[in-house]
Image 1 (cartoon, rainbow, N blue to C red):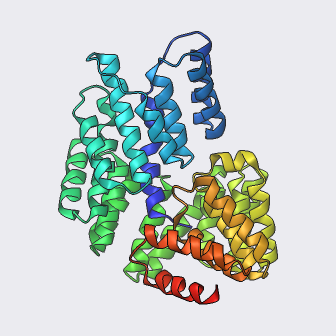
Image 2 (image 1 turned 120 degrees about the vertical axis):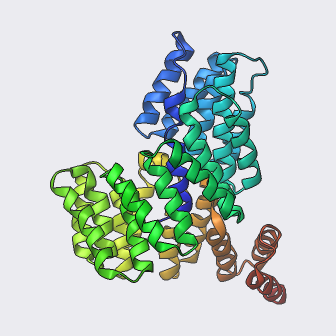
Image 3 (image 1 turned 90 degrees about the vertical axis):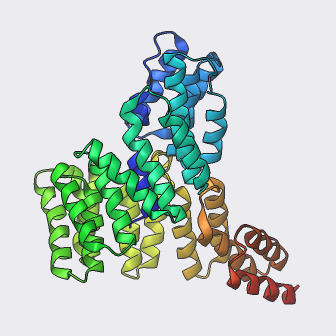
Length: 396
């Protein structure tokens, strides 16, 4: 239930809307404002439609392209976002142009992070930081750049940036969480624990910090503390019904699947569609494949839920896995294709591998070979897939 890449994007992407300019009045501006309301409600598909409609009315405002690009980022469609941002650059030197350019560089950096092009992330972050306007974004831009350096293996540079951010604002919880991730990855668990504890002190209900701290305690083999931190998440439900899903996750990690299901059921009754997805996860863990499939499909059929999901391919991947366990390979292949189509820029290795396997299972070795060869071009270091290519050739 935890994704490091997703945590980082969540930490930097959720604030860009706060820096958007108030653009005035008129039909296009009304559409823009409506789109921003959808962003606040996390209905990114509807937001995108509003921003694109605004562009259709007035294709000369950079703010509309930037907003559209950010909506694409929220939806995980990073290449589409980059295309939008490319139309927003303004060469003139004034406060408004500089503000827009800073936002587009930042948005574009997020897009490049999403497609794992970390050199371009760093380049865009530096360009954004060179612009003096909208300095309230600087900490988030720096954290994104630090994460890119960290992923490239330059841990020293990444730590320098995190340290600098925290020195400039020692109450910025996200910086502590992200630096804790660096400490965790370098097996400095004590400092990771300190940073996450500080983040929780600053933001008592920052559930990301709690679950990250849980992971650190598990790595330290401190099971009592790991259980204790999960119990703190569970205790929050008594005073805050919005904590049903985090509490359900906490029970899940404790292996208390019935309690987890109870929390997710309560969340679903409160209108939280993501609870349906997590119910599928619990059923799958309990070995009830048919019930898991039912929940995943129910979630996938809720257009409003999928519109807010940044990893639609993950939902389709889980449906495909359920069908594979039922030996229904045709339907499994159908959902793999849906996953690749949903956000093929970030669908990941597992969906692409499943596609090859399923073509083999259905006897379509020609397409299996084609997909396997394309996979090897993208991931040339995957020795297992190279073996698979050789095997498939013997079947044709």
